[in-house]
Image 1 (cartoon, rainbow, N blue to C red):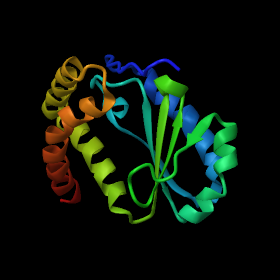
Image 2: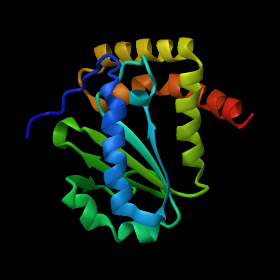
Image 3: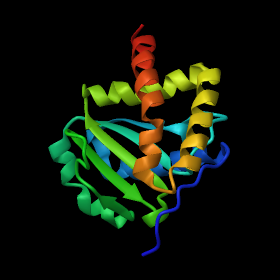
Image 4: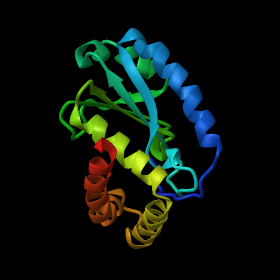
Amino acid sequence: MSKRVIELVDYDPKWVKIFETERLILANIIGSNAIHIEHIGSTAVVGLMAKPVIDILIEVNELTALDTNNKAFIEQSYIVKGENGISGRRYYEKGGNQRSHHVHVFQNNDINLLRHRAFKEYLVAHPAIASAYGKIKKEALARSGNDINNYMALKNDFITKHETLAIQWFVN
């Protein structure tokens, strides 16, 4: 198995279409249990460089009902990862070692829904902060030694600070 290579690329307008295509697949899998299926993460912020991975946030009525769809996720080439480190989440990956999609699912009213939505909308509404985030990501990539955990850790202070600001901005 080859090692995952962390790649940052300039914003690609095709990401919107890729998300829309996947949204339809996911809506078909989840059915009426899905409340919202949203494009989040850096690929959802016009102009922001990103790892070319489509992050998708799904709000559902019932996580236990969602778990009955695991076979359908697998049939659509997803790896079912369970909570994968975040209590109350269901996480799915697609695209093998180089990942094309990450799907984060939470039950309605989970605080993580607000956190993800607020951060994305904050970056969209504040282009200077999005640009600063792009620079942080570029520096983190250069310093990470292609280690995803190191890359994430190097971005963490920026994300923590701005996520708090984003939530305050979003709810007001």
